Length: 71
View 1 (cartoon, rainbow, N blue to C red):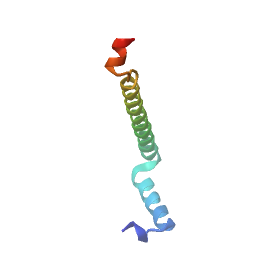
View 2 (cartoon, rainbow, N blue to C red):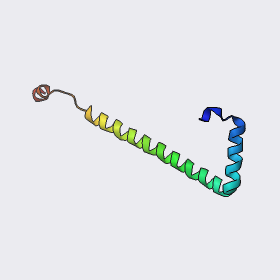
View 3 (cartoon, helix red, strand yellow):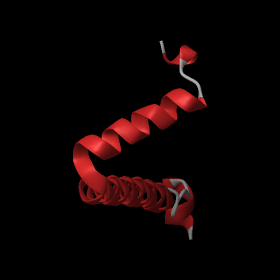
View 4 (cartoon, one colour):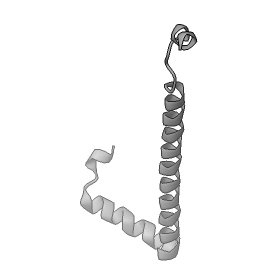
């Protein structure tokens, strides 16, 4: 469906959105979208950090029990 829209189509859509909502609302909306994207990226990086910490805690001591008793 979007394969038929060229650069002029996108420009027309942008102009219609700007006329309907005004410059202030569009800029506020884009600001909120930016905040949402940065929040999502922060959440993904925190989740990856937690997974890495859990993996490092699991790999801290891999010595078999028999060798621990002998030492």
